[in-house]
Amino acid sequence: MRYSYSNIYASFVRVNTVLGSAAPPLTVKLVQAFRSDAKDSAIIESKELQYDKNNGIHVLEIFPDNVDVGTYVFVFEIVLHDSAGEKVYATGGQIHVPIYVTGIINVRNAEIAVLDSDLGSVETQKKIDLAGNVVVELSANHLQKLRLSFELTTPNGHAFKPHQAFFKLKHETKHEHIFVVGNTGKNWTGIEKLDFLGLVEKFYYLSGRYDIELTVGDAVMENSFLLPLGHVDLDLPEAPEKAARLPPLPVDPYSRYGPKAEIAHIFRTPEKRPPQNLSLTFLSLTLLPFIGFLVGLLRLGVNLKNFPSSAVPATYAILFQLGIAAVLLLYVLFWLKLDLFTTLKAVGFLGVFLMFVGHRILSYLASTSSKLKSA
Amino acid sequence: MARSSSKDAQDLFRALWSAYAATPTNLKIIDLYVIFAVFTAAIQVVYMALVGSFPFNSFLSGVLSCVGTAVLAVCLRIQVNKENKEFKDLAPERAFADFVLCNLVLHLVIMNFLG
Image 1: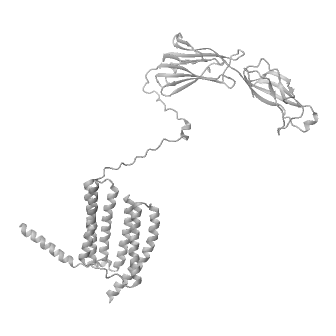
Image 2: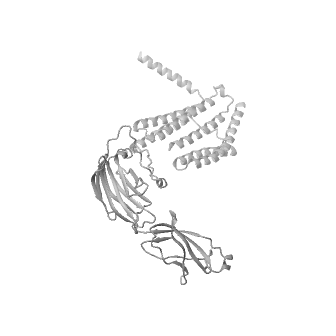
Image 3: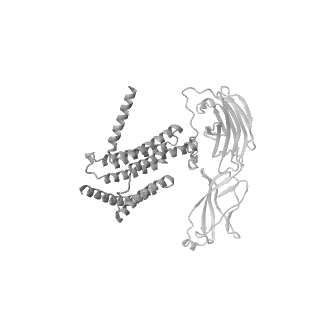
């Protein structure tokens, strides 16, 4: 539950049963209300809430003036009017409700200054209006200090300690350094003093332009802000040899869920082909030995007299030749478009067929030739 | 001197040719096949020397196809030759079946490599 300081509302409580139906007649008592960080200091104690019959709500009409912005815990208790109802309903005892009282925090006396280290004297000092757009141009070297100070007050005029107050210096190379404002002493002060002499190593001797950013935020602060304040030109000494190397920039942890960089495949670019005529000439040249082979066969007087004349072996012989032709044709198809798997499957079937047919015809030929020999 | 040596060479070749004429016809066919394959390979090598070896796998598969089949043919010739007592028990048909099978396997690989 939130209670805004800037817009005063009466706080109210609505009571119903677990199942959402209307509750029996009862009284809501505010047993206690205290700051969540100081349990002893109760701001309200044992107060009955007024029942608004029209709206069916219990209203806390008077909100105490001494409530400042912050987080509070209100402890409610429910008292049933009808004592018989206690056997029917369980009220749940004391109910702790966290309440955020929010408000606009005033920022005052904001200024940023460069101090000389040894004397503490102010070199340059600039007032900044944190409400508007401020651009501060500063320059400093490693012997100087940077001081940022501001005051935060609640609407009641009390000092306010924000939950988060960060001062960020960001180099051009995206290396950034974050300082928590005012965590030096026990009491929070809106003062951040950076002694560059001690920070030289932390800054990795990185001279140049640093952007300044101030973040002040709190759950109860209605005007939390993140403001770029300008930049400071830092003149740091040269890095010694053994100085720590600049660490790599932190990688955004979400970037590994993002799309990866596209992989560019490098293919071998085709080299210049020879003129087509030359290639075709050599294609015909490769045919020449084949023609020579055929001519040679003719000159040797090769014939097909040994081809089986009876029907069955002749069929096997033709099938054998056709099978070999089919396998070779399949190879050509494999070269042109098929992949290895389909080709191997087809070769398997054709191979079995070829084996059977080939065995038949060749054993027939062998038997005839051996008969011829023995005869 | 030169004339006599060329005459000697002619005599030598004639003697060789007459000796070769006695080889059986089936061996001659195989020889012809080997010559055909080797010449085809040689022409491809000449082509490669002329235009460069850009689709190198294509060149290799072409030449190796010829050389491989020539080698297989030589093996077939060894097994078929009746002079070789070593393969006396091996039927020439069986040798031819081996030759066909090996050629089919060889050309499957060649086609795969051809790209």
